Amino acid sequence: PVLDVSAVAKAGLWTYDPGFMATAPVESKITYIDGDKGELLHRGYAIDDLADNADYLEVCYALLYGDLPNAEEKDKFYARITSHMAVHDQLRKFFEGFRRDAHPMAIMLGVVGALSAFYHNHLDISDPQHRDDTCVDLIAKAPTLAAMSYKYSIGEPFMYPRKDFSYAENFLYMMFATPGDKDYKPDPVLVKAMDKIFTLHADHEQNASTSSVRLVGSTGANPYACIAAGIAALWGPSHGGANEAVLTMLDEIGSIENVAPFMEKVKTKEAKLMGFGHRVYKNFDPRVKVMKETCDEVLGALGVNDPKLALAMELEKIALNDPYFIERKLYPNVDFYSGIILKAIGIPTSMFTVIFALARTAGWIAHWTEMHSEAFKIGRPRQRYTGETHRAFVKVEDRK
Ligand code: ACO
Image (cartoon, rainbow, N blue to C red; front, side, top):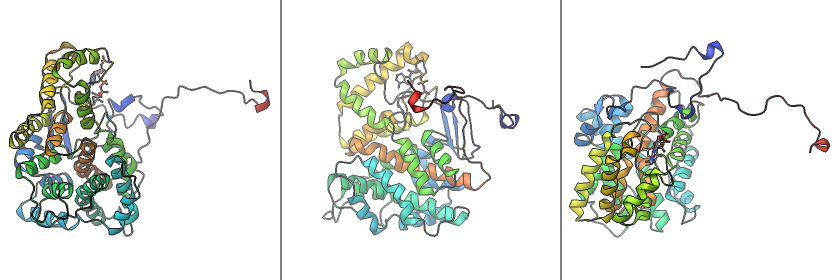
């Protein structure tokens, strides 16, 4: 049930809603979530259906244009994306300004914000064609920039996208190949897993980062700056930073016998169970099932027997049977398993949130362009003031 309070402001009132627990500032046709049923639909398609049958770029197309592409539309969209994956040569120099030990998420944030300086010249955000070109450009460049952030941080030369590789293949190629690897071809199991991770992270309606993109976008700001705002919001451990935090937590727990004492600490609120809980899902996160299956496939294909997976499963088992977690409806979220898959693929922990940002760029930019294609107001929340009321001014020499 929705209570429309849009007339409330006209009556000189406003609602107080910390954390936007009960506030929808927008209407959107992109993504539907039923948190009680554990349902997630993009443009009406169930997420598990998409993850099983479509690839990430088809999902991007649906997020942007409202429908899955037919064969011809798909070919054209892929060709457009592939031809925009390369980045301006000046950007290489921009990367070189960062410290080598900078967190790749800091680099990603800075570089995406700086795209405003490289690609803004003829951008008219009121023109649908300009907006569309920007959407394609950002989705296309996201894997290149993400991989460049990594390559820079390990001191290896940048690798450039190849026209004969798919989106996910290109990402793995730019991450792991070196100039000498002429015959590099990423493992198809890992390509499929990467593509699924991208798909499962593509959009999630008005979460903190998407809301940030919309809020910044509502001022008419440059879209690259808007996406940088999304990256900044995503970085926090309560949001996209959780996948990195899950692995840090598993490292800290160390071994199976430490799981039960750790869970006691969680209950006394001395620790948080990272990768658990969600503002909207109070049942299960529908992305987790696909993520867990993908995790099994990757570990099976690579022959990895990761003790962290055993720890993660023990944590999950205890949590799902413990009244503390049951009462609070705390279930594993998408980030609980994604970190284990990424680790098995050989991706360092510091890149986990960057990969989330890469994938979520599609959702962010789809929301940005949806907002600009209809009438919207600048986002301007109010506050409940709890400070001092009127006080008499005291001259500095008379202040105690
Ligand atoms: N571990 C332990 N207890 C938790 C957790 C957790 N991960 N999450 C919530 N709780 C407890 C809270 O302490 C609270 O308990 P109380 O009623 O005794 O005070 C209760 O569950 C309700 O929690 P809230 O904080 O009100 O839930 P909220 O909706 O504000 O927070 C959030 C959701 C931020 C995702 C939270 O569950 C969390 O921090 N999880 C861990 C981080 C994480 O995995 N984030 C990824 C989210 S998904 C994503 O961004 C892709």
